Amino acid sequence: MTGAYVQPIAPVGGSLAWSALVAVLPLLTMLVLLAVFRLRSHSAAGIAVVVALIVGTAVYGMPVGSALSAGVEGAVFGLFPIMWTVVNAVWVYRLTVESGHFDVLTRAFGRISPDPRILTIVIAFLFGALLEAVAGFGTPIVVATVVLIGAGLPPVRAAAASLLANSVVTPLGVMGTPILTMSRVSEIPIDEIGPVVARQVCLLAVFVPLVLVAVVGGWRGVRETWPVALVVGLAFGAAQFVCASYLTVGLSNIAGAVAGLLVLLVAVKVHPTHREARRAAADRIHDSRRRVVEAFAPYALIVVVFLVSRFGPVASLLSNASLSFPWPGVDVTTADGDVPTAETFTIDLLTAPGSLVFVAALLSIPVLKVAVADAVRCFVAAVVQLRWSFATVTAVLALAYVMNLSGQTATIGGFLAGAGVAFALLSPVLGWLGVVVTGSNTASNAMFGSLQVAAAQQSGLDPTVLVAGNMAGGTTGTPIALQNLALVSSVKGLSGKDGLLMRRIWPLSIAGLAVLAVLVWLQSTSVLGWMVP
Image (cartoon, rainbow, N blue to C red; front, side):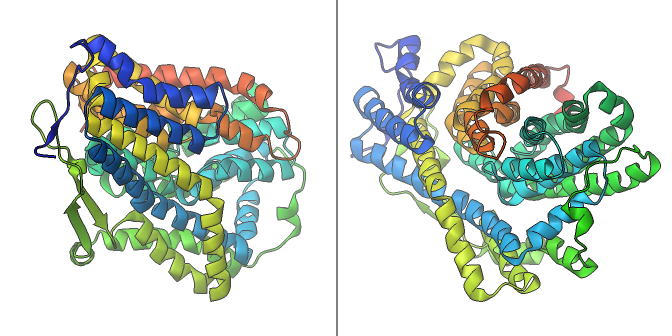
């Protein structure tokens, strides 16, 4: 190749509309294969990558070598830092299971209140947020459902509550993996995206406990427990907001869960609900205070490691291990003459979220009294558990990189920009759609992140507001995501109930999406523009 590849905006007969119709084929391919043909995510994404390569080379004229190299770069980014973070987060979870401390943790939460409505807030929302911080990928939904059923809740109600509770924690979950992905594909710094996501999602988080109480106990439950539910939601949302805005997005769910739990402990004393539940295992098994402290230790260590890594001298020392280099075979210039940041690949060996979680996991091993051999086995088990996630994430990131660097995303964005300011209303809808069909906020961000930026820039809107809107919209798609419904229907007592769950939850999903669409639109105007930092 003698010169840089220049991205064409309208390669099909000079028509932006026809070009956009062709450019969207890879995304349509993946969505149809997932939603209509029910292919597994990694298969659908893999086929979509092939379509993107064909469109990029045959229609856009991108050199074959450059297109293939772009796909490889995306796949490598999917491995590090994305899956590196996920593997280590799941490793922490498996260590607690291996040592028996996970059961201690669930019993500790279960003793907080005998009221099933309060217990739902504790298990599905607060405990679920902790699990989302270190496991994700549907784990909190399944675990919370099993625990709530064991506590005496009807299976369908337990599953519905767990699905809804998992909504507002996904954008900031798995140590910030979704935002890390969005930052990479949108070329907007994490520190700019996090605060805006917080200003959208945290408002919904305030009301999630009230919704959970309504699902489990009906309107009577809301009347009897609304003070507790409301203050827990406020505490969770406030802590999530402060952490994402001023500390680090990776700890946002942990901060929200801890703050919500502390407030709930006080609230149930001030406003007791006087509702007894079926006695569960938590009432029959006594755990020593030391065991309970050990059970919470891995989460505390994650917080400490992240905070220490941001301390001035330590941060400077760790950053010395970072490595940046031009990605071979990728020499691209946009239609405006800019050079995409994807041309340079950066490896943050010691400051990547996954590396910090890895350190916290190593420190947790002696605390949890896990033998080294067992710890290694848990790590291998985590990798095996995530094998299909590896395939899906690498394929989706490869798809995103090929579409972005070939110019397909810019074409779609230019076409959508014709909607003007009204596109802000559609921004969360794209995120919602992406999560419904893929089951992953991370995958949705990879699919639509660059598109949101392209449309925003050509519409005169703030790109940061729209990429945050994509993530926020995804939260409302989480409860009815096809993958999540399939996961929860595997729990005993829920086989074949995925259709029933969909019918019960989708009105709440659409209502939340409508609220977010209006919020994002108003944040894009002078009405609520003051909310955006």
